[in-house]
Length: 372
Ligand SMILES: Nc1ncnc2c1ncn2[C@@H]1O[C@H](COP(=O)(O)OC(=O)CCCC[C@@H]2CCSS2)[C@@H](O)[C@H]1O
Image 1 (cartoon, protein in one colour):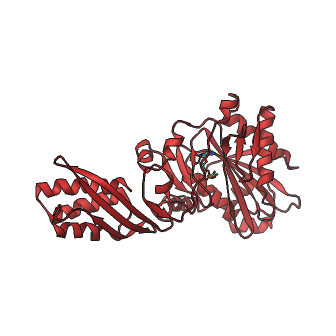
Image 2 (tube, rainbow, N blue to C red; image 1 turned 30 degrees about the vertical axis):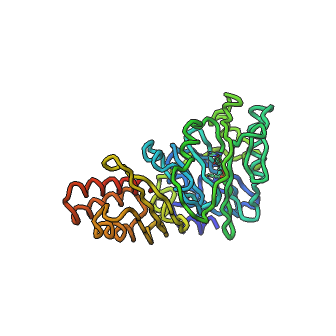
Image 3 (cartoon, rainbow, N blue to C red; image 1 turned 60 degrees about the vertical axis):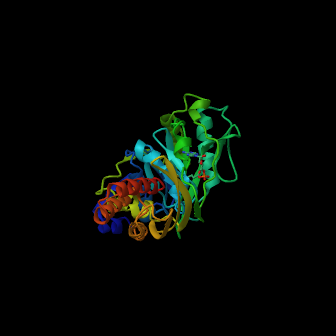
């Protein structure tokens, strides 16, 4: 088997080395990989890569990773419903869609992610969470941490410190969970509060909880200390006593094809376009020359693209052909403020030069973009 492996790809050999020559052995081995990257798309690509390429019949893998500020939504979620995209764009917080189901979580360098890879048969979330609890208790024996029936970890029975999700393949599986050590707790609730109204969708809804950082319970519970403790507990399960291997997910030589996986995970088509079809029925007011105008807007959005669009405002507020242009122009476009801004300014240029009309058009377009 080792010979076959060598022939298949010399590149893969480097990763094989990470696994400490586990091929050919009959006893199960353990591998601990620690990402050197804080890029959410690179780290999610590592998960994909391990899932697709590593032989989990012969070894279990624990992948440890942290991200720069990001919001990670579940595979079947609606980002407009789950988070404040305006605030995130303003603060430079990434949005990522993972391949596993479940709800939306906030990540930054104060949050650890742990991914447990096994065969589907050996997949066991309770065992993994118990390992995390043991690790935490090895650092602070008095810590009151418990797993819930949803596989969350709660501190003092009230505060969520960890959320779980999983991806089950035909033969392999992974369970990944977060662990809040010292995340930015003032940013988290604002980022996970959607300001967008009138969304009707069957997308998976998150289950919000009160959250807390472990460092609030005990200041010695830093990310580094917790990752070390989790690694020790994991290592203790295996005869080969795996040590932590630091990996660079941007290394396409080590992880053949990983940059393509990263590219795919960062595309608009994946992050926004995979949102389950949804409807939007909302209204807003525009102030123009000291009076308010009521606007009703209904849309259907499929694969992130506007499929139908109706905008109602009093007759004659805009020339009829322009309001038709607006509705028709939006259909077939991405539900995305950048593209919409470009489209609407182009439309205006071709339709009207009138200053009064331009002002009204711009006010209306600003409102339309604010719901995207
Ligand atoms: N980082 C983090 N950790 C724990 N809980 C969080 C976090 N961020 C937000 N929350 C809280 O969980 C709910 C959502 O709970 P909900 O149960 O809906 O979703 C989850 O827990 C999903 C966990 C996904 C874990 C993956 C592991 C690697 S990539 S992401 C949210 O509204 C907040 O109240």
